[in-house]
Length: 124
Image 1 (cartoon, rainbow, N blue to C red):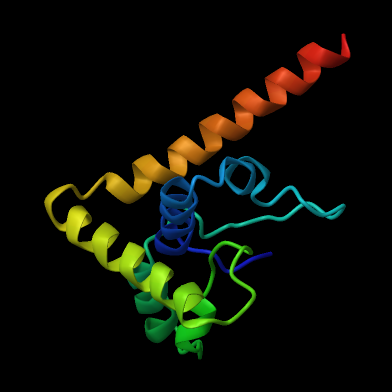
Image 2: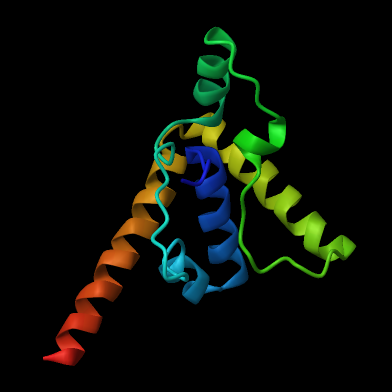
């Protein structure tokens, strides 16, 4: 199980859209032989954090918030600055449009479903 929350998944989708990386968007969670499950994917990070505090579950900020596209591996300033800017932009937009993060995660799921249909159509 991957501790990805609504916030981290929406940020990932937003970064993929901004960078034009549709492959990462469609393949998210499918790139390994072992299927990924993300039970917190539709739970806002603040709610997950609150639940953990109420029930005495220790978490690090990284456990709740850390996730993102696998594309940033070089560790350069540009690689770390882009996610920060994307997160700030998404958070600002979400203040005016609270359903934005849900919409982004739903968009990713729709792309994945459509890609799955395309694969099955090609095989037949």
